[in-house]
Each structure stands twice: as structure tokens, then as C-alpha cells.
Amino acid sequence: MPRSDASRTWSIAEIAEEFGVTHRTVRHYEDLGLISPERRGTTRVYHRRDRTRLGLVLRGRRLGFPLEEIRTIIDLYDAPRGRRSQLEYVLDQIDERRADLEQRRRDIEAALSELDGFEGRCREDLRRLT
Image (cartoon, rainbow, N blue to C red; front, side, top):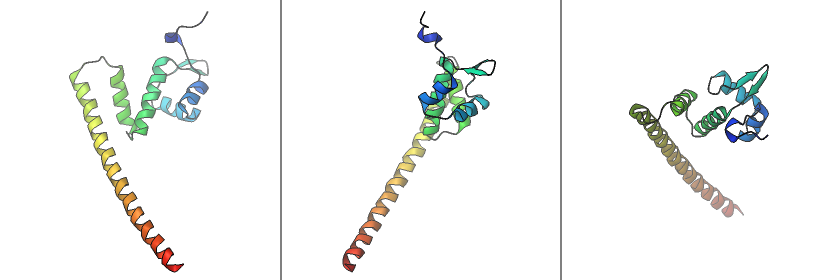
């Protein structure tokens, strides 16, 4: 009898492979309390909630959020929706992150421009030497 999608579970190997992380990474997030798989003896059993939370943690890391901010945000994910203070907090965090990323983009664009100029001068010097 096939399991319903809602009752599906995953092993640590399946979760790690799906998200492209190591077992150690998954256990680290478990140690931090960001995910909390069911334990059956020494076996970890991951439910949909764990899978969703791990996805949110990894997305937050890719966006540069510190783990404590990720914890706060994903804990809000589990809280009842619609609380004004929660939504305002998340929106403030998004604004801060966006501003940081936009500054990084400007810094990267400036660095690339400097590299382009330096490359051009080097190529010109090389051309003169040949």
C-alpha cells in the first residue's frame, strides 16, 4: 500500500543527496536544533517538516543570513500566520539582506570594472612589447 505524500519520510542519505549536502551538514543543523528528525533507535527519520526546514536553512545560507537569523525566520514559518509583528520582522530582515546584497553587487561590479581596466593596460603593454 503506497504511503500518502503527507506521510512520506526520508533517510539522512536521501535528504543529504536531495539537497546536495553531506550527512555531517544535516547532523550539524540537527545539533543546532534547526531540524529535528524522529529517532528510531539510531536511525534518523526525516518528515516533510524537516525537509522543508532544511530547504529554508540552506536557502538562507545561500543568501548570506547568519544561522540565528535563519532560526528566527524558520521558527516564524511554523508560527501561526498573519501576526503583524512577525511579518514586519521578516520584511525588515529581507530589506536588510537585500541592501547588503545590492552593496555587494555594486562592489563586485566596481571590482570587475577595475579588472577590465587593468587587463586592458596589461594587454596594451604586452602588444607594445611584441
